[in-house]
Image 1 (cartoon, one colour):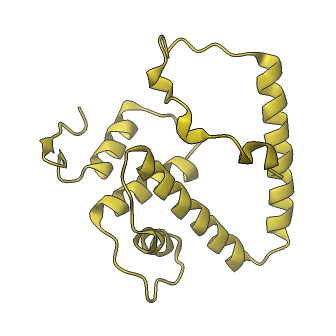
Image 2 (image 1 turned 120 degrees about the horizontal axis):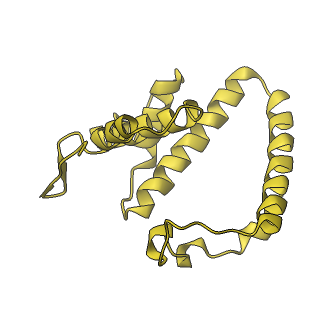
Length: 153
């Protein structure tokens, strides 16, 4: 389904903040709407396939997607997380079995908390309070490595 995206080299792309005037968004409606329509079609097909699965398999698939998202998010920051620890955190939050999985560290727990809030409460406003709570979850000690952070500021 996503063959046309397979060969793109995402690692060579710039982050949005690396572009000049990155806060001044401009886009081409025709191109964007075509891509969104294709994504919506694929989403519908995926939902249809999920509905044919049992509820437990749906939860397991959601857990695996969330775990992969957490690992990819960490990679953006140059962090390599233990996949089993991430799966353990996600599984415990979704009520899935965690037998044989290691206990996750607080850094992984915070990242999973943020991702769950963002994906489960996507319809809520992105307020300053919410952003600050995400930052506090990601840096519970108030440090990033040896650097002191002013979390929530």
